[in-house]
Amino acid sequence: MKIAAIIPSGGSSSRFGKNKLFEKINGKTVIEKTIEIFENNPQISEIIIPASNNSIDGINSIIKQRSFLKSKTVNGGNSRQESVYNGLQACRDCDYVLIHDGARALVTQLIVNNTINEVQKRHAVVAAMPVKDTIKKADNEGKITETPNRKYLYQIQTPQAFRFEDIKKAHELFKGENATDDSYLIEKMGINVYIVKGCYKNIKITTPEDIELASILAKE
Image (tube, rainbow, N blue to C red; front, side, top):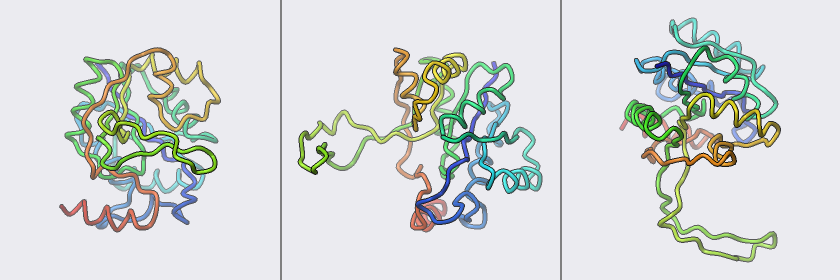
């Protein structure tokens, strides 16, 4: 059995103001910490990193400096969905694939291993945590229209894991949807997707404040 990891790293970092992947968390760049987790997991056979033009040289340099032997970059697309599909096309004979945000540098081996274990049983899984806050749904004018039961609401994270043929087919069927969540495409195919316990520390670096928070959480 072969398991690949795809780490899409082609975002514009528009909300951060500069390329967040090369900001440092306690001495290591965001993307370095992310890749390192998957490099150190013996169940992962290969790591594909779809990267944007402003990231690919820097990521290749990190791969070389750290002697990350499983990792290689490919050109990213104009959207996250395109980038993931480019990564899927670069996978070699894999049975399952984990897709993980390049900016989620605090993912743990426990989450990765649990995701791997569950995808072999359930075929489509996502790391997630129950929402802590009450969620309101509002219309375009800001009027609240619904208060969903928090008991059934989850904050979706990555990694998300799927049978390779399923997720590749989903990307081909729904090309151009501009989906920011791969499990959405699997759901559209009528395949059930299941929750795997993530961690509230598994944050996505989006703003400069997140770097400060991640630095504290990483020390813990």
